[in-house]
Image (cartoon, rainbow, N blue to C red; front, side, top):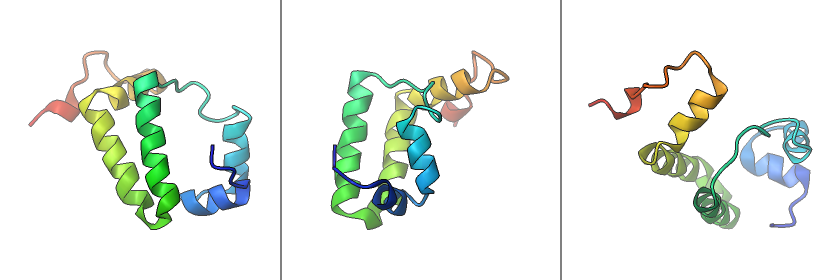
Length: 94
């Protein structure tokens, strides 16, 4: 969407070019599917990060908080780690 090279994307995200390549080729993260609403939120935060790369960590944190409230993170965690109880609510305990 932003016409960035793999090198530039890796620099912004603080990961390797190889990791970017693996994401693009669906060798990494391919089992994680987001809803249309979640994808729109991700794009909104990506816009912020592209405009101000120095805000990466703050925006990733804010996105995680947003997803935590909607239980998206819980669903992802349960799908990736079969040891997590289907009734887990640790993120919502006060």
